Image 1 (cartoon, helix red, strand yellow):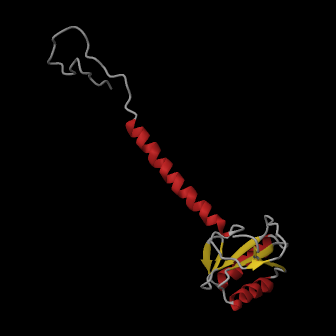
Image 2 (cartoon, helix red, strand yellow; image 1 turned 90 degrees about the horizontal axis):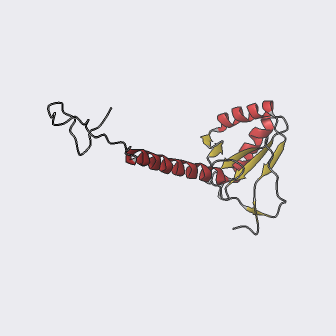
Amino acid sequence: MAISGPHGSHHHDDDSGDAPPAVFSDINITPLTDIFLVLLIIFMVTSTALVEAGQGGAGAGVRVDLPKGAAKELHVAAQDFPVAILADGRTVIEGKVVDAQQLRERLTKLHQDAPDAQLIIQADTGTHHGKVVEVMEIAKAVGLDKLAIATESEGSK
């Protein structure tokens, strides 16, 4: 498709000469640039959200204010499974809030897939002790023997 330029007309009624009408050969890249900028902004926002979601520690997907402790540094293995307990008592696994039954089902599947998996409990400092014990009891009931409670080193923050 040709677009007529400033020196000629595309109408066939104007037969004033033998020269064909002038054609623009430039492509307007402004709409393309606009689309790329919008996509760039979308990717920046989503990647920031994903990174912030993963900073809860060991892949919990939420931020938890861990208690201070002097225990040695725990090296997280691929089969380790973090469970976050928020200050209001909600339990979060894999970025989703779950109830006790869903936690039991997920831990049962974890034990079947990786019997040597370690459960890492990331309880907020404001969490009631009973909620932590409840998660530990569910883990023991499904057969998970390795439990760890995540703490923050004394010198951090």
